Structures are given as structure tokens and as C-alpha cells.
Image (cartoon, rainbow, N blue to C red; front, top):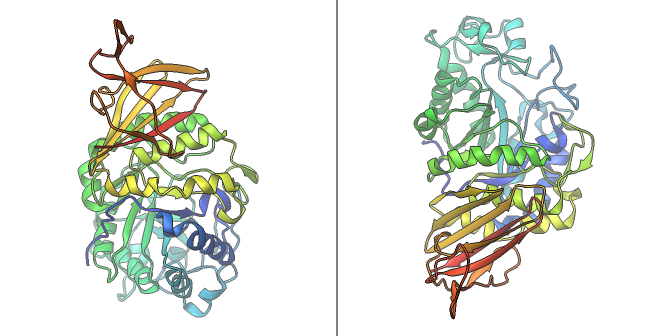
Length: 436
């Protein structure tokens, strides 16, 4: 089998922003049912269980030291059967995957680089061998923020076999996406290669997502594109406008490197009902304004990032759900073959995406003040006299006027082109579509 190469960036839900390490089977299924009933037709089709699903004492606001992770005899993680009752008796996530697949959705799991410390303490053996897992461990290359795992000694001849054994287990459960964490900060090239090869050895096509993306250099882009389906370009993004602004520059650097089946990932959408039992903050509706919320979703889409919603879908406000239901999001992600920032001046940032005879434009006011501007349609890549331009969010036409009217010309617009007048509140945006 080969590594899954999704034709468009995946669109789904991830449990981290709302439930952190504590999500339960009931909560996963509630979000899956909501997605199947309300969002699947708009392109949303993936459910991801994030970190620490094997910890029976998982809590909000962090990780437990010396966690008694559920493991099989070969040091492979098993779901906590209290939180995930269908996994009892060694069934793993197979029964849950079956339910998710029956809804027309896909199931993803978060995993960590390396070997659980508990597997070493209990002298477990590598699956199918007499090799102690401690022989292939590299305790000096442990995770800097999760206390449960240590690295792998890639000089040992059995080093890659541990990843193959774990992926084979997830494969048998019916897992469609693996989010492999602690791979990118620092950049763990040997682990990425080994994990990718393990995924390619699976019977199913599995999407491989790499995290966390902190301080990630584009010098690694060819290795990433060869070995992963998607990879994070940033640390965790939360419901703060500063996080959105910080990611704008990163997306501008990475979006030109996106290609079919290899997608730079700007992290989850921290929208809706989040913080319920999360790693960060108390239960809340996201702290972004309506304008900021729309800008975030617009920018992530035009940058062709995977879209993973972080809020609890059933308890998220209807206005936010309505944004997700817009079919234009999946349409752009499916058809655009190029995107990038085309201008950044005086607080106004412009993005363009193109593909299939369509040009999409996003403009965002990054300042704390109202912003007005007059844009030349040729500067947007729409030509001197574009046909109908449509607002993606409202479906309404966007008026363009001639750059010259009689003896009068519009400042900043060529006389043989057309002008669009733009007025944006602080942190607001527009999202336009033009079909040739």
C-alpha cells in the first residue's frame, strides 16, 4: 500500500480544543453524528481523537506524570476502556471505527513519537521478537513537553520495527488518519522517515499528519512532501487574534509549497464551544469576534490548509456552524492548484488562489482601525474588465467600476482597468470568487 495522498486538504473535527486529553467515546460519537447529519455534504468527513486516549486518569490542563497508560504486551497503546467502552477486551478502536465508517466518515488518531516509558519499566518485548523495547529506546531524545515517551535509537537494527508494529495495530482497527506528534520540534528526520515507511506498509491507505510545527523551517519541505500527507507549520493556535496574525506570515511562506497530497497545515480552527476540558483555558465559546472568526476561516481556506474544527460541534453556536456549511470552502480546496499572498501594505493583506478557471481573493484588515482602499482588478489577477465577482459568504455580486469616468480617473487604478472599493472594520475580511 502507499501513503494516502488526499486530493484536497482534509476537513474534519479534532477533540483537542474542546476536550484536550479527556475525550470520551460518547463525545466522539456525538460529534461524528453531528458532522454526518449537518456537515458531511459540505465536505467535512474526518473525526480525530487527539492525545492521551490510553491514559485512564487523563485530566484537563496538562499531562499526568508517570501515567499508567493502557498497553498491550508489546508496548503498544490501547484505548482506556472506561472512556472508550467499545474497546474492552482488546478490541481497540475497531468497534468505534466501524460506527464512524457507517456514518460515511473517517477516523483518525493522535500518537506520539517514540516508546512509552511504562513499556520500558515493565520490560516489554518488541512485537514478534525477543528484543526488549529498552534495547531500541533512546531516553536522551525524549519529548520535551509530554512525559510519557522516550525516543528510538535508530542505530539499532530493530528500530523501525516498533513503528511498523504500532501502525499495523491501528491498521487492523480501521484507522484512516494518524496524527504523529513530537516529530517537527526539533525536526526528527529519522523518525519521520521510519513512520512514513510504516504507514506505507499498512493494508489501508492512511493519511499521515505530522506535528507540532513549532519553528518549522521550509528547508525540510521536500522531505516532508515525500513522507507525509500533511504537516503542521506552527505551534497550537488558540482563539486569539494575535495567533491568527502570527500564522499569516507562516501561511505566506508555506502555501506556495502545497501540492496534491502534501498539505502544509495551519492548525485547528479554535472556533465554537472550546475549553470544555481542554489543555488551555476554561469552558467557553471562542473569544474571537464574528469578524475575526470569518477572517480565520477565510484565510485558512485560501491558503489551502487542512481544516480541522476544534469546537464541540453539538454545542457550538448555529452562526459558526453555518460558516462551516458553506460549500465554497470544499470547492476551493478541491479545485485550487495555487495560492499565495499577493500584497501586504498598510495593514491590508491580500491573498489569491487559482484553479479550474476560477480565481479567489481574500482581503483582511489586520489593524485595530477601520480600513478603506480602492483596488485595481488587474492587481488582483482578475483582469481589466472582469465578469461577475461574487462574495463567497453572501453570494452577492461585488461591484466594480471603471478606472476612468469621462475625464476623471480613480487614484491608484489604471484608467483602462476597473476599481473595487473596499471598506473593512478592524480584523474583518472579504472573500471573493471570479469565474473566467
